[in-house]
Each structure stands twice: as C-alpha cells, then as structure tokens.
Length: 611
Image (cartoon, rainbow, N blue to C red):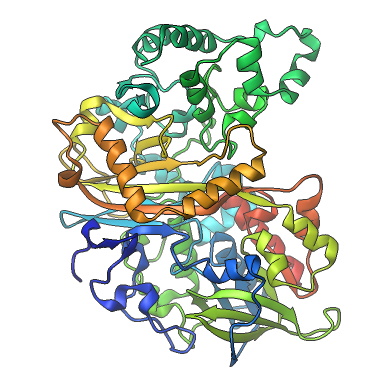
C-alpha cells in the first residue's frame, strides 16, 4: 500500500492510494458478500469522527423530514436481532444477545459510519515507516474495578487483564522527561505568545503521572501576559474567595449549588479582566460539557476550575491508566474479534493491539454476526400492530440506495435523540422524552509528529490553551502493550492529542450554545482545521526546534457534532428508554452518560428487555 501523508488531503477527504482503501467509493456491502480486502478505515486521516457523509441521510431525515429514497430493495435477509449502531453499546448488545440465546442466532449490526466502534475511534498514523496509534474519541476504561460482575466477566471473556495496565502505563514517563502541565497564552487573545509553567486549573489531573505547576501561583501570575490589573485579579481568584460570600455557613452549600460561578467571579471577587474571564471559562474544558459560564460555583469547585484547589480525579485503587494505545477502540475491537473470529489472529485484547483487522470479514453471509458499515437506518417499524407483531422491518440507506431487512427484535443503540425520527410509531410521551435529550459537540484531533524535540524543550506534557480552538494539547498516554511501544525519546515519532470542547456565545442557554458550536464545527473544511493547528503549534513551540511543514506528518480531526450525552429534565431519560414491544433502547445516552462501561450496562439492560 502506498504511503499516505497529509499532502493527500482534499478538504479533509483522503485521496485513495488505491480506490479500494477509500470508503466512499466502495461498492456497498449490502449487495456484495464483503468489503474490498484493502478497505481499512483506521489508517484514514483528514476529517474523521463523524466523517463527511456519515450523517447526510440522518440529517435529511430529521431536518428535511425526508422519507422517500426511491425503490426499496428487500434483501430477503432475516435475523434474530438487528442492532442499530455499531458503537460499544451496540457491539455489546450483540455479544450479550448471543450469550443469552445461543451462538446459532443470527445478528446484524448496522452503522452509518465507515468504521465500527462509534466514539471509540482508532487513529493510525504512519510516521517514518512506524505505526503510531491514538484514539479519536472514547478514551479510557474509567474506574473499571467498580463495574461489578457484569463488567468484570465481560472483560475477562474478552481477554482484557486490568492488572496488565499497571506495567503497560509508564507513570514515570513525564517526570523522566521533565514534562509538566503548562499554559499557552496566544497572541490573538493575550497580546503575546507565551508558555507559563502552570496550568491554572485541575484538568491535567486526567493524565496519570503528569506533574502540575512547576512554579507558585504568585510567580505564574507575574509571568502571565496580562495587564497589572488583570494580574491582580488573577492572583485574587487563585487565592480563593468563598469566604467573601456573605452567606451564613449553614447555607453555604446550598448557595454555591444554586448560584453561578461567573456571577461569583464578577460580583464577589470583582473580576472584569477579559483575559482572566477567558482563562476561567476554559478551565473546566469538557468536564461538564460546557464552558464554566454555565456552571454553578459548586460544579466549578468540583472540577477544579480557575480559583479552586486541585481535586483528585481518581482514587488509588482506580488510577486513570486503563487505556489501550487506541483508547476504547481496543475494547470495541476485542468485542468484534470475539463475534467474528476470522477478522484476524489473536486470543486476547493485548494480542489485537497491532493487528490489522480484515474488514472484508465483517459482513460475510456465513457469519453469525454481520457488521454492515456505511448504512444509515431511516425507518424501524413493527410488522403490523406492535402489540401482536412477531417481526420488525428495518430500512437503511447505503450509497444512496434503500434496502430492507427483517428481524425478530431490534436494539436501538444509536444516538437516542434520533430514535423518534426513525421509530415513527413510538408512544407520544416516549418520543417527546427522547427529543429532550441533546449532546455537546466535542473534537479530538490527533497529530503525527516526526519528533517531539520542541515539546521537550518547553517541558510540555499538557498545555492548557485558553482562547484557542483546541483548549488542551497533550502528549498521548504513555502506554506500551501488545508489542506496541510508546515513543521513547524526543527524536522518535509520536502522536499528540489536541482537544476541543467548542462553546457557543457566552451566557446563552446550554442547548443554544451546543447548536451554535455544532454548526460552526460542521461548517469548517479540513483546510480550516489545518490552518488553526498550524498556527497553534507554530506559535506555541520554539521556532528553532519546530517547523510545521518539516515536522508534522499527518493530521486526523475527529469531529463529534453529537459528543457527550446530556439528558433531558426530570424523568425524561427513563421514560425515553422504555422498551417498545420488540424494540429496545441502549447506548450510553439512555443512562445518560459518556462512559464506556455505562454503555455496556445499557446494552445488557436492553437485551434483557427483549426477553
């Protein structure tokens, strides 16, 4: 296969180094027995995540109320179960269904993306002939030891040894290389490009083993490119100020749980410097899926936003180390391998880390479980009266053609807010409850570097970057497992993560901010993202050590216009996820949550509700 570099990008869609590798030019696997043998989406760069084309039909369904895609081809395929959505929850639902009903049952998983895993997206970068792995969404198994028997049993069956991560994750990596948490102040926002060895927030505690501030609050404030007034206000915020609230001690907890963090900054501490407020707004990043302008004082305190002491993110028994080099794609791949053994060799999750899956095995008619990609489900309907029906018909669109398949039951493991648009005869109360849900936009950009000498020079393990599109830039998690070796020295290639939790107009309601940020995100082309990344890295890193055109090999922008799940008010989540005869609802949205283990638990519930 020819080498793919960022020079092959055209507005974020990777040119084929052989048309068979290009997902949108493939003949649909709805009419062939399998994909082309060279089809391999993890190696694609450019615009990924919900990549261009993946949501086209879903948006036509929801925005334009489209219901007619031309003649429907009945594939004459019948299944015991159809799963809508091939993320961790959908894959888990298929797995649990076979466990409960037997390995002779036929299952079809339909997904609108060109790869399985949902937010658990595997990113591969080839740099100087070496494969560097990273993740484009779902990051780490959080608190896996607290998951209970269901999670423990599943991980054991998949060959995921939690104890192995204690040696796979190099907790000393950052200290050995004198890397710590810093803040990058950009010229456009603060009048000067400057790196200060202090994060001014708690976010770096997400990275196990990453040292925090190298200098004191007072010294960091003096180095910050703020006016004297701004520096004075920043230091006042950092020194804390809850004692200045004129609230009786007995009423303090209730007060901070109901009052705005931004109002506290402005009215109690007297902060009005725009630079300090910019730092404050970005100091929670994606902790609560919003800027801190929408947080209460208590929420800001709990996430260690600007002005609050660092808080422990995880306890000693559950450190944040349970991370595959490709994030939770490692879990998704283990599930797929268990159900479709011919996808490749390997007996446990660790042995799959470097395995290049055979995607042409996903949808073979001989499989018990078939995974059909590039297939957007647009209608799910019982055959007749739902209460008496023995079957469910599923219509989906692939390559602008409409197909129909049939099943005895369906698990909807997709974005829950889409379900009322797809299952059109849902009870009205349930449909209304599902529509109340929303998701915050999120973006994980992975950048392949030929070396990280410039990063070493400024001592950056993670850089908070208030005012930039990507509010955090970090070295990837230092994990070596399954024959994969994390970058060893600054002369070696690596992948860095750039995280963006885009916000809307400050002070606007949450749903409006999500909508505004989502439209802006989807309106950008790859060239816009590359320009932003070029400017960010070139201004932050020392010019003598870093040259963008020389040192950047590849860029993958994982855009999730619908990222973290945010449930509707009151009891709407429980109402929305109720089973509807032969149709049940999974996905972490139905919790709601943004956690892989919760996604698994929701799948288990949904399968059991089918009976």
